[in-house]
Amino acid sequence: MMKLKHIPLFYSYDACDDLALFLSRMAAKGWRFRAFRAGLEFERSEPRSEHYNVQVFLKNTEMDTAPEPDTEEFAAYCEAAGWEFVDSSRRFVVFRRISDEAVPIVTPGERLSSVFSAELRYRLTRLATFALLLASFSFQAASRPEAWLFGHPTLFMLIFMALAVLVSLVRIPLLLLWRSKKSRELDLTGEVSCRGGLLGSPVWGTIRLIPLFILLALYASSRPHPAFWIAFFAMLLLLFAIGWLRPSRGENWAIQIGGSLAIIFLVVFIGIAVAFSTDGSGRSRGASNLADAPAAPGDLLGINEEPSDGEYYRSTSLLGSLIVIDAEYSDASGTIQLYRTKFPAVNDLIYRYLSKRISRAAGDAQPAASEWGAPESRSLGNSLYRFYILKYQDAVLYVRLYGAVDTSAIPSFKEKLGL
Figure 1 (cartoon, rainbow, N blue to C red):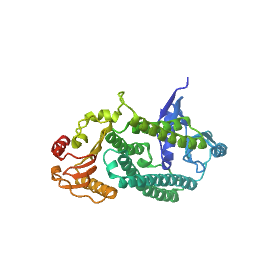
Figure 2: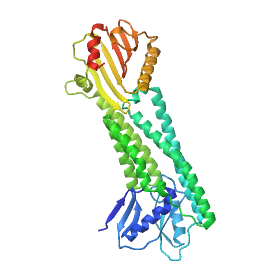
Figure 3: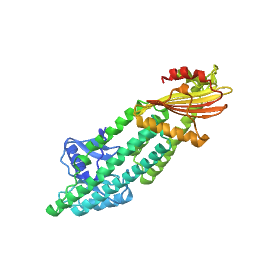
Figure 4: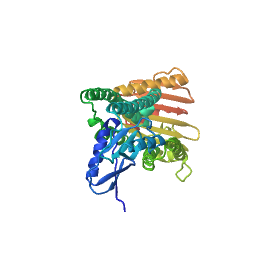
């Protein structure tokens, strides 16, 4: 039975000679390179001395997980020159020398040009993609800061995309310096070694993932919605399946587009299912967990009855925490949002945004009643409804009530919320 080994290593194009050297060392240890499969796949063999040549073929694309017709035509040409085709993935094409009289596949100048062109295209594409996503998430953040500062996935994605753009902005100038250095090497020696050093090695690829793991761990501590984890692991599974099954270029496009749409549909379906689920007594799960809330809108409305529907949840992030309490009663309803943060700038941002939002929706607001004891406040409404936005030293409280407000209940309500 064939014994296989899989190593999840990924090289950049400017480190193609590092990849060739690694394959030769594995062959010397008794592991012969077999294929690209979610990394590198080796089969057990007798230790032997083998020379590999890794070419960067520009007719291939980043969507190629297996040899395409152009690749096979190129491989046939190289075999006539003494090189056996082994496998290809993306723009990498791996050859094994089968003749002592094998001649170079391309000239050193052509090879340097191909490697630089492929790596630059890859880096520019990544930069454009991450910059577009960063702009999209930044727009969402600017539009609704209260929704992303406290545990919303947008904050996680915003930080990740910003780091990705920063890495790309650093990597491209370094690539230009690498090309300049290799061009001088080519002029002086007539040869060129396409080794990427630390930045082109799998070690650097692993180092780059550390900030992602840290962000993911911090985000996980805020107890995100289950739909986030379903989408996250579904995407990882999709990418692994593509790397393992190695579909053709056209199939790869179809799988990625179809798979992404399926994940979006799954997340939306789960979100709707959770929103409309019940606890078995006819009440929504949101209404059932209102018992865990420190306070309720009914406390300010003078209502003692149980809510017919509602929601209570708490989320946290690096910037603070958010408590949302929403309840509906037979003749009234209300919403409470309590933002807590130790950052004064964040506190000011939330207060200004909420103040502008209610002013746009319902007109000019006035200072709230003195019972609230807030240094800054806004109040708006009449006998039928009332909005409050109250700014404390380390918190902003937003209250929306539909019903008559019992002002005598304000002190005890604040005490329940720790204000």
